[in-house]
Image (cartoon, rainbow, N blue to C red):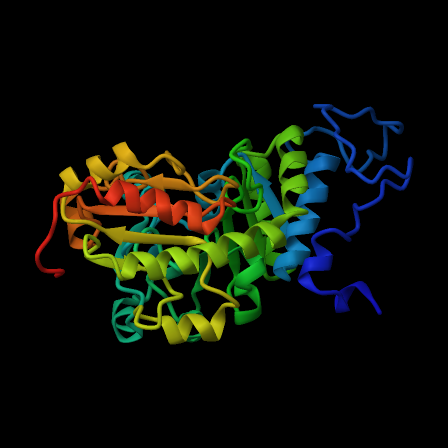
Length: 391
């Protein structure tokens, strides 16, 4: 049985860097060196300066490329560094199509930065393939997906977008942070560049900031590497090592968190003080069937809507188990308020237009016992005013 036949669960632990060939160490060596001695003035070695390449970072880059099924992986100092550097593949006069309820940091780089360099953009409801097709222009070079989207968990038909992109000579980018390659394999569906905030599920412990990109083919991978080296927003060796360690437990962490998320989503969906729940695991969630076709599970992130900001304040004040914080994908459950956290960079009118209301909360389910989390929410909901009709 070759390593290509191994399951994803096994590949998380067994890859090219599982044993250091020099010492037999079963943990990837941590190379903090910023520069590397050259033994020959005429022929330099593989590594010369840590911005251009570092053995510890390279081990992570090889690991994520194999897990995503891509030709090349690249590690960056944050998820936004990975996204921003990938956008440098565009040139002045190019146009990018972007899913409308994209992460706030991505919204900011597109609207505040790319526009200054003459790169045009259009936000589109990417759940509607006809609308996407109608917005493609002769100068459209990238279609940018986020599925499930942040924070409304909207589902994009990946293969449908890929087919549109190929017909119009566009690249496709996809933010796979919410599901990871454990649950969704975009490159197998034809996506050109897969992006991650590795800070989240891949590292998984709220202790590292990191971004990853995986590229489908070698030529595009070489182009993106040149940009990574030129722009310099690379991941440090210590952080690369932490992500590698986190990857080893991704399967068991995500399995447990997803099981709990399914229970919590069902609980919230039946609660009289919850107006709506957004989670691909619910049969009535828009895009549920598409998601089941292209992903192996609904993931561990959900959003739900309460009456208003006052209800949000009361709920946040009284829940005890989830931390109230920016971020997601950690061992502890994280309750976030998109309007003032993940999407604070998005103007209020733009948030409202996308359904990111003042009553919306996002929950990333961690490794606590699901019944404990539900009991905690039940006690907090008891502090909210009674409602007579569920809208």
